Length: 165
Image (tube, rainbow, N blue to C red):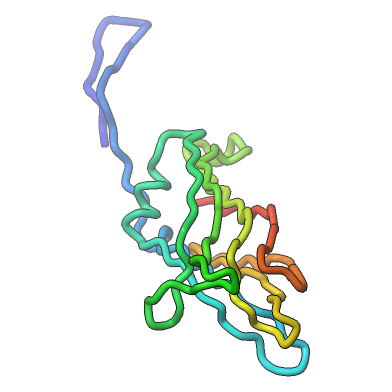
């Protein structure tokens, strides 16, 4: 895109809004899976949270330093809410922030920081009545696996991952 020419001045000033679209192939959905770690068998899917591609593109185009916190309902494979051992709906808490890339060679690029805070109201998944929860987050070709929080019905991770596009 080209700006308007400002002639006969050493202090050119433009007050022209510009919108730069983020390449749709780079910003896809954010998929968060909550799983129960099992030492003796395969890990079990507790549930998942999906933030669709359109919303992630709007988030990525938000002003720099934009921050949001969300408590998102965890759904089972059929789209139904996961209910915890305490009979409350399972909720995944996260924080998303849009930051500049910390390098001048990538001016204009953005970093999306996603903080996995916690997952509350987990269901009983083990014989002992608790859950060994961990989270797998996938976004823009990047995969992050949290630590496993053993024997808990509320997993506190406080882990972040970053994606630059």
